[in-house]
Image 1: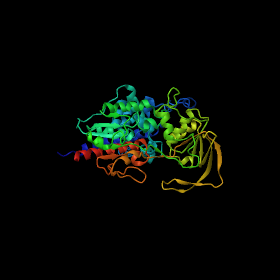
Image 2 (image 1 turned 30 degrees about the vertical axis):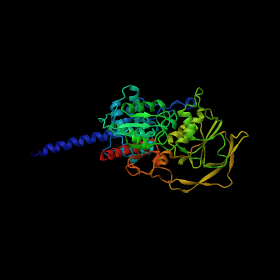
Image 3 (image 1 turned 90 degrees about the vertical axis):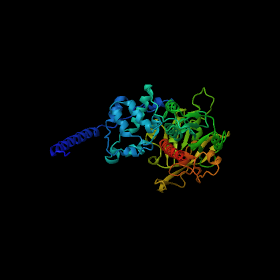
Image 4 (image 1 turned 45 degrees about the vertical axis):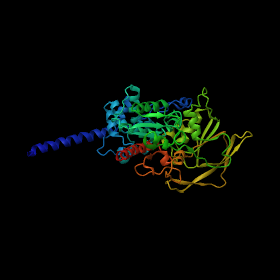
Length: 491
């Protein structure tokens, strides 16, 4: 049947009018300023280890911020998300005040939305790809704040939904380690109908989410609520179980497990190997944060001790260094310092974390590096010798390499030093699995499907990358789940 010319003309007019309305509407959206996250006052929050700094958005703030989203035809923000959240979709639900549905959209691809809304570097990922930032050089939509809002709203509502689960296929699979990579993997495998078990060496589930990130940034109760959903999905958690010691991969295969995901992280701390580094009072950020965060050493009623100091120096410039120095401040340090060999602008820590540290009175000593430690008669560190640096040519990462300034050494008083210069992969699984290929750095070699040289063994997160953000580890877990599913189906 032929369509009349008049009808086509009317349809074109209607389309043109709709486009005009949308453009006008978007122009109004562009005039809305980006929301500012409410925060606890520095004087108050630095007195409490478990007081969260960011307070979250109100419903009114969230709806207004969501209305800034232009609902792009080609949403490049999704390209910047390692777990492929449908960002415009969940934001539109917030704009329409359907907050529970927004949370459901998040959980379609993200097992830990309340966690990611707090600790993901959105400014380097989804928000960097936002149309406002990418094309207009304006403040991007606050995607991270909105993700946290929707996830928190659902948690607080008491109406947390469990994602849809496929019928059980009877196939047993296991994760080694319970960090973000394994949790993301477990959520996807459970949705596909697998019998999922997660083995954890420590006494609590969560990996770095529990032992590495302080409660003022990520409260344990938030992590626990996310874990409850995974348990309701059928995921079984086994604590105090060291794969490679308590039982080997071969032992677990004999119990019927068909495939494994290794997400054992990078828990081996690095040191600088400078003179005096073995004195009492010099410890890794891993040990320091684990004692405080996981074992709650800041609570005087607990048995786990932690060294405290008046003059605390944290060596490093990443998020772990910021977590450590801000923790030291909360534990009573009179002078809490960051010692970093590059400039402030080159710090890998999130801008927000640096901002919060400055507000809390943290001292930044940049372009400096420790070269020797000294101790008192009891063997406790009491001073350190520091060398000034300047920036030279860019290194392989594109950052300018620090160069020593000869004759620039100086000494400073310290009674606690926390080394936060990175970590190495956990060596237990690579050393306990026969014929498993590893890199010269000790990471597990995997292909593009996150599959190792042992076909039934997949891996992701820090044990593959050597060091990664929570969301990149979760992206690895999702990819590994998809690849493992294909492997088991073909098998």
